[in-house]
Amino acid sequence: MTNHTECFIIGSGPAGYTAAIYASRANLKPILYQGHEPGGQLMTTNDVENFPGYPEAITGPKLMEDLQRQAARFGADIRNGWVSQVDFSTKPFKIIVNNKDNFTADTVIIATGAQAKWLGIPSEQRLNGLGVSACAVCDGFFYKGQDVAIVGAGDTACEEALYLSKICNQVHMFIRRDEMRASKIMQDRVKSTPNIHIYWNTTTDEILGEKGVEAVRVKNSLDNTTQEIPITGFFVAIGHTPQSAIFKPYLDLDEEGYIITQPGKTATNVSGVFACGDVMDKNYRQAITAAGTGCMAALEAERYLAHHK
Ligand code: NDP
Image (cartoon, rainbow, N blue to C red):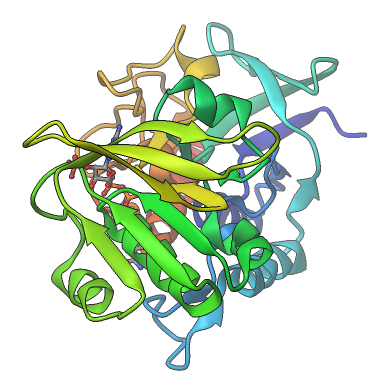
């Protein structure tokens, strides 16, 4: 197994695969490790309606399968496994995969994405997998015809509430302020769906149930009244955390953990290390922008290698 490459790509979302397409077409013979969740966040997305080129929409998993095949077609070496450690203090850079396999690389492209956030209440952890989920598209089907709840007020929460409304009987949506953060079109769709009941100024006190979710206790923050609502599924859709922890000793991160890149570029504070996609982008977080920055990272890596040869 080759253990040195000119270009090592970490992550397999739209950013990682696009970087792999460009790097392999530039003959950098990239090695890409897919990480714990091959395909990334889009594997749990139903219809992608806004990726240019698909006028009839495409499912997230199909889009990711196509991107992987496209990268493999040009010779990208795509492998299953996760990067457990890096050392960016020496050149070539050192990378350890699965806690045991050692690699060296002249350039590294980080495309590790972001992970779902949780509310942090004890019952959420206790009932995780027993009715509590952070992915409606993955788990909604288990609650077919039943009553469920969802927390969050961004585009993800709206998308998931709409998805659940098509499968479930009633969707209770808890919003902590008196307005939603989601785009207007998504808000309008949610508000006009008859079986989505919106609770404004409402926070989750506790999820109730022993061996599974039976109800949720919520609190109205204006008058401090609480109420218990019978449900069998509880979905959390309150945003994401960038997956950047292993890079912290070497790379500049912002206060939320996003990798800081040079303005208008994917170059990090370590020359030869580039970051793209959701791990460095908290503004746009779209598949198409992730793919765009993946392209930029590969082009910048290619120029870096040409300059340093
Ligand atoms: P966001 O960060 O946009 O929204 C998170 C939401 O969760 C906010 O409404 C926030 O409330 C709420 N929230 C956070 N913490 C808590 C808590 N402890 N209790 C209750 N509510 C909480 O995340 P999203 O995942 O929704 O979206 C991320 C990005 O991806 C956005 O830019 C979005 O536009 C984009 N996106 C686009 C889609 C599309 O175009 N098809 C689909 C999905 C996402 P508050 O507003 O009060 O802070």
